[in-house]
Image (cartoon, rainbow, N blue to C red; front, side, top):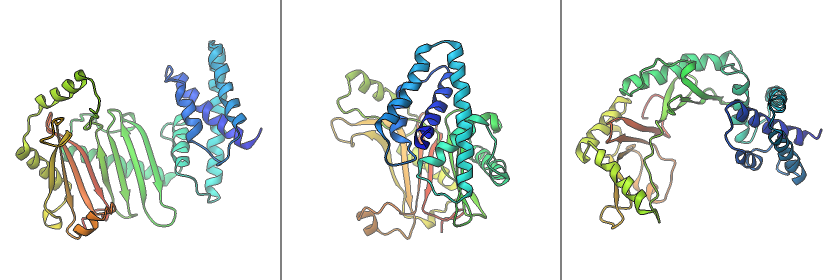
Amino acid sequence: MNPTKKKWLLILAALLAGMLASGGVGFFIILRLVKVISWQEDLASQTEAATVLLCLKYIDRGTTNSLSHFQHYGRSVLSNYVHEVEQLKKEGHVWALDIPHTYQDARQYLHPFSFADKKEEAFFYEKMIPLAQEFIQRNGLPYDSKLGTNSITRYLVDFYKNRPGGQANLKLDNDWWFYFFSDGQNTEVRRFHDKTKTSYNLSDAPKEKIEAVKALNLRNKLNDQTALELATKYFKLQGHKADDFHPVEFRQMSWADKGDPDYVPLPFYHAEWYRKDVKKEDRDAGIVALPSVMIEVSGINSNLIYYSKTFMPVGSDF
């Protein structure tokens, strides 16, 4: 079998196997995957057609034996794919950005919490889980269970190739995401997001949707003063010092600007602190790689819903 075709077949087979195991997610995602994940820049159209046709034939048969057979086939080619990537990694190949994530997802599907090596396993158990647990406790977030592998639905560890350290992330069963940075000596939670929806597009929205979004703010228990106090509390809880930063830039999140006839306030607040060495002319020039801390809080439950620290050393502001 042509190597390119083989790789596409096994990726799609693996996806379909997961769909079958989960009761079906929808076949249209396969068409998107065909366009997104590639090992080579050029892909003959007949390869795409043959791959989709194979999947359709198994779905159309619809019998338990056919689906079971395809799932078994999918797992076998997925195993070959993981083995092949691991061999190529040992040879020092550098992949496009999507390949590490595809490989990691495939490996986790086959062997949940089976690690590439002892280094990755140690980082997961000794850094990621304890730091996420400590972040939850320090910020008083509403997650009662003690973190363990049963609480985690996805993770990724990506060590740097040319220097110590790396980046990692994990997703909890309640859709919270934690992102970690390590410099080889220190590791920290660099970003947290609890997946609260804080933005709405009300352009040309029906009246019912606009009214529903407006009603959200009726649940808001904060005002500008109390929300800023809350954001500042979370800022300090992460170990940041106000003296290292310019004055906070703060606003209530909304659709449209205040004073605009379409203005709809939301029960969420955004605060951002730029580090003292950030110059106004750099911001005016649109430079995005500027050291800052961003915090968002909810007026509904007074929780931290988003945190990020960008372009700063691990473990300190400077």
